[in-house]
Amino acid sequence: MKTRITELLGIEYPVVQGAMARIADGGLAGAVSEAGGLGIIACGGASPEWIREEVARARAITDKPIGINVMLMDPRAAEVAELVCELGVEVVTTGAGSPANYMAAWKEAGVKVVPVVASAALAARMERLGADAVVAEGTEAGGHIGELTTMALVPAVCAAVSIPVIGAGGIADGRGMLAAFALGAEGVQCGTRFLTVEECSVHEAWKEKVLAAKDSDTIVTGRGTGHPVRGLKNKFARECRKMEMAAKSGEELEGMYAGSLARAVAGDVENGSVMAGQVAALVTERGCAADVIRDMVREAEALAGRTLDELAALNSRRERA
Ligand SMILES: O=C(O)COc1ccc(-c2c[nH]c(CNC(=O)Nc3ncc(Sc4ccccn4)s3)n2)cc1
Image 1 (cartoon, rainbow, N blue to C red):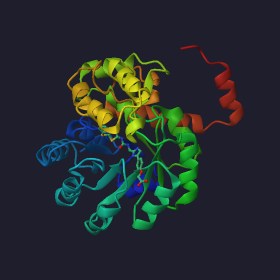
Image 2 (image 1 turned 180 degrees about the horizontal axis):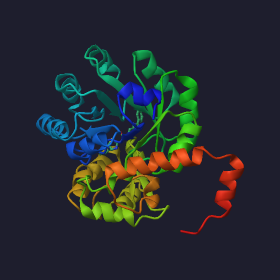
Image 3 (image 1 turned 45 degrees about the vertical axis):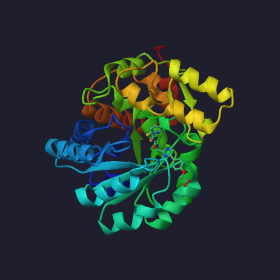
């Protein structure tokens, strides 16, 4: 299929795998890219050596474009930003901040720059600085989030920029993909849906928690630190909320979060930060990266070919899950 996103990124399907810190490695990114989407290696909290290794792993799996993600709250963001140019990845995405300081160097190096934004203002700023596209990520997403929902944010960003917009946050199947396109997007980014695929190396306990999640099983912690993070409800999340209700100081709260992601990655899904989006409730299968992408596009195109009457008739015959 062809959209400005497939053309810009040199990919077959406008489906980007979201960067999930300490989870999205070269194996997952390589598989997603080989399947025709865009795989992204998440560099939040990663060492330059790990990043080099994972880019090499992805290159061994596919000769299609891959991306790396710079998490801008990471103290080593500047070092990772240099690696973007040195390693010759085709695409860089960024999160949790503004990549203004690095844009010129990335553009100079011919890298496609696709910042994740949580507001129309930031999207417009990114376009002015030369971004090739933006990911408009709604608060439904897992991990570090903004405040606006995908339903509100995507149309607002589309109205603010002329570059193509990728919708993200709460998208896990063809229905979500079609909804994002209806809102103005020309591509989608999914994170949570890729957590359970066989190529994702996240701990089995994390996968099982996602597969068992209900719609009300995610919670936002860290608003007190100014860095809200969505994850699955567990002992850690309840303790965070208690600390925040007790209006503990920023330093005490920061202390809570340090190491929380690493604990979850190691399989401690009760005392760690098990990041996942609200759409975890829709993720009930494992599968593989290629099936996720193919099924999502097929379902979106099948639904798009129908009139509203036909969609309503389909919905009226819905079977309870
Ligand atoms: O206005 C500005 O200057 C920047 O404001 C922004 C505000 C929010 C965002 C934003 C929202 N969502 C994203 C992209 N998503 C993400 O970056 N999600 C992430 N999840 C986990 C991450 S690593 C981590 C580890 C431990 C604790 C917290 N985070 S990064 N960026 C981007 C920019």
